[in-house]
Length: 390
Ligand SMILES: Cc1cc2nc3c(=O)[nH]c(=O)nc-3n(C[C@H](O)[C@H](O)[C@H](O)COP(=O)(O)OP(=O)(O)OC[C@H]3O[C@@H](n4cnc5c(N)ncnc54)[C@H](O)[C@@H]3O)c2cc1C
Image 1 (cartoon, protein in one colour):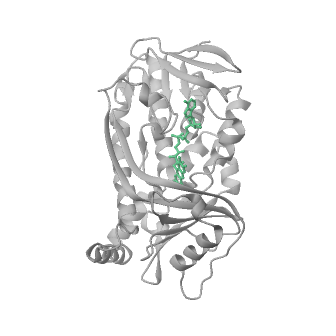
Image 2: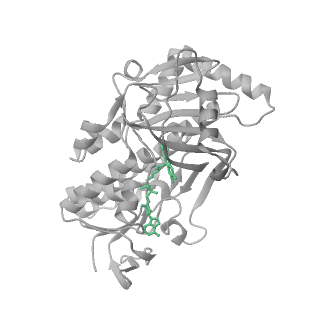
Image 3: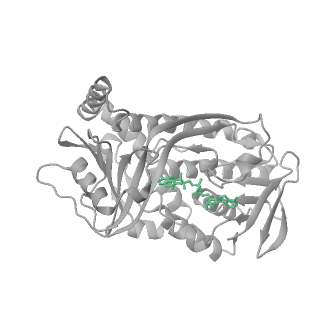
């Protein structure tokens, strides 16, 4: 089998890359380990930056998002028993974010690829990337039990944090930058209309809480918990009780509903440099992870593949490799700024230890500053709606 670009992973990064390449007449094959149903139902992120929304619209896959997504023009920061709104529209010259679940983005992209005759192979096994240090990379895999070989000009490693592409790069090429946080997020997906029109980020002495949503009928709520915690230790009643305490405010009520899903996710910041090795290019979570407090993981995946698609288009139209050679450097400039923002939001809003009153006073002062200074509010808003795409 032969194609121009072999893409490992049918998450947002892999599917969007395949879609962008197709719009420029470049062929790709996407190889995905999980089933189509699994990928389309996997609950993850849900906040799209203005630039991601614009990209999906511009490339013809934003129609359902524009119909069903929720435009948010601000967020609430809660601390000391009060809520303070950060108004994106006035602070960023009219920008906003879109609430639209990641799995719906994946569904729209999959439908678009398949409708255009794109090759997306689900449930492939034993994917191995080889020979990417030379001009003829190969991807070996098994499909319906049969061994297959895909010859391609380039390989895009869009296979997430636990994929095979990054570990295939020889030792010594990549430098890892990492921070593991001493807490995790326990998240629940709830069948109930959101109790607030906008997201509420709550700093509380019991730990951080976030009220978010995926649609007008589905709420998504999170609480900070110890990283070693087992989900079985958290019965629904215990989770609701904690959410009520951390999000409480006079005159407001948290609406409960059936819990559809619950999970605990560890929190880390992670970047590898460079994001390329020969003809293998890493994009999205395979190259970097951000703690979800800034709602950036999916958006970073979109901005990486936009850069990669542009570089591949340059190569196929002119034979030049200038943009491909600069891929890592171009992406990393934006990635590090987004890492900084995600780390900052995480550091401001979570309890790091039980017994450090200095840090707690400092966090409260920071929240007070962010919500009372126009300059500080603007900094938060500018980053939240998204820095300019590369
Ligand atoms: C559990 C979890 C919860 C998250 N929750 C949030 C959240 O609440 N808010 C937020 O802002 N962000 C969240 N994120 C981050 C966000 O969802 C990611 O940043 C985003 O999915 C990145 O997209 P991606 O395409 O790079 O990677 P992924 O979405 O991980 O896609 C990678 C794809 O590659 C496939 N794959 C992996 N290995 C192989 C292999 N060997 N062969 C073939 N295919 C393979 C995977 O099945 C997957 O479909 C969450 C991430 C995770 C992992």
